[in-house]
Amino acid sequence: MELCQLPLVLLLISNIYSGQTEEGPKAKVRIKPDQHVFRGETVTLRCDIDGERVSSWKYSWYKDGSVSVFSELQEHTFNSVTESDAGKFSCYGAKRGGSRTSHISDEVTLTVSNKPRLVLSVSPQKWLTEGDPVTLICEVERSSTVWTFSWFTLTASSDYGNHYKLLSDSSRGAGGNYTVSSAALNHTGVYVCSAERGKPAYNTWYSNKQPLWVTGVSPPVSLIISPSRTQHFTSVSLSLSCEEQSNSERWRVRRYTYNGWLEDCSSLWGSQTGSTCKINSSRTSDTGVYWCQSESGENSHPVNITVHLDMILESPVHPVIEGDSLTLRCLFQNSTLPILRVDFYKDGSLIQSQTTEMIISTVSKSHEGFYYCKHPERGESPKSWISVRVSHSESQISVLHTLSSVLTICPYLLVTVMLIFKCCRMRGITAE
Image (cartoon, rainbow, N blue to C red; front, side, top):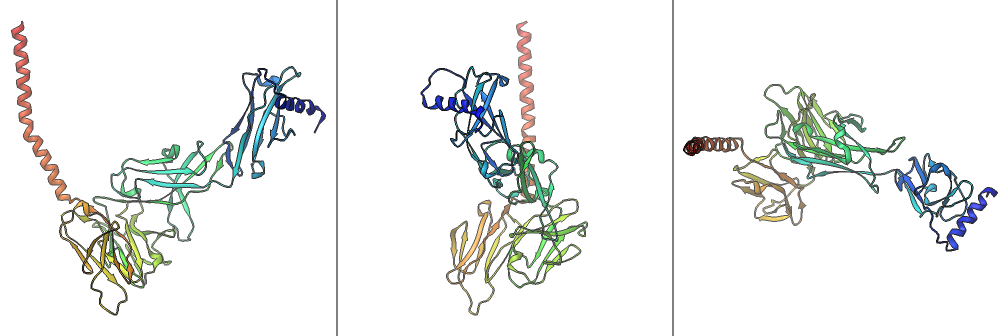
């Protein structure tokens, strides 16, 4: 230790152990950007003496209870912090000329961790109906200070790499939330977020991928699947076509598989001819969400397709119209003996134990949910979401009925208003 620092250390020890009680300013440690930082960030320790001018004080920094001074600057900066820089820090001030000293500050702990992990979640759910509100929530684990967030969508690639496109309205992600007040079909996609803070800026890695699937009332194109069901056996041929009345050539089949890849139909897993994608021999890795997308970004309904061994549930590809009938069947890939009975479940509750077929004669909104079938020896099928929609004609009738009621009431309202006005006017004349 240098001799010039010795009086400061002796005075510091005297303050701590002699029970000195006279009033004096107190030093205070501040850490920017946070007490919990991540490896590679720029971190600044600052010592302030309450109510005193900066220029008239000399500073001493101590770490982990040591009496050795490691810095005499008011601000000490770690340009690229590491775990070895972590510890408990305190500071102390002495007025130039030695006429006065501060009380030593309280210890402040600096914690250094590896690269932060971003967690992206969605509220209320990732499967939406056109017009629903939705919020993507990006959080930096183990950190509560303010970060600046950016938002990206995953773009399709043929090289199995991740490519991200910055959203044009990414500024709506301030505070860690990206909110869409009314979801549209073109919001279907896979999202990620990133965060930065400090000067110079410290950037995190990308978050986990979070898909959003939006179904509309009248999409510009329909995805037609053959065989027409959402669950399929392995080693079968599947055909997926984008059908539009005007022009189907501008649409391509796109999918997001559960290993996290967003892909256009290509030779890696299928073959595209015009607007049709064909999978010659299905595999469990073909499980994922499929939809049609145009070059301008228009989307069809997304469809969750599952490829499974042995046992599947046959269910409709597109939403069921309220009032229609619904038939669900339990199918088996390899069975030497006929299977006469299975159990059908909705949202985890048993609803039928009779045959391998279940019929709902008149569908209502209450029938919406996750369905699957189960056999005591063969196991159970994957789950399928059954969506129920109000028919377009019924909604038109409802609107017409409301409009008719309003028009019927309007003449009576008009007559009532005119009579009240006339009555008030007559009273005014009588008063004069």
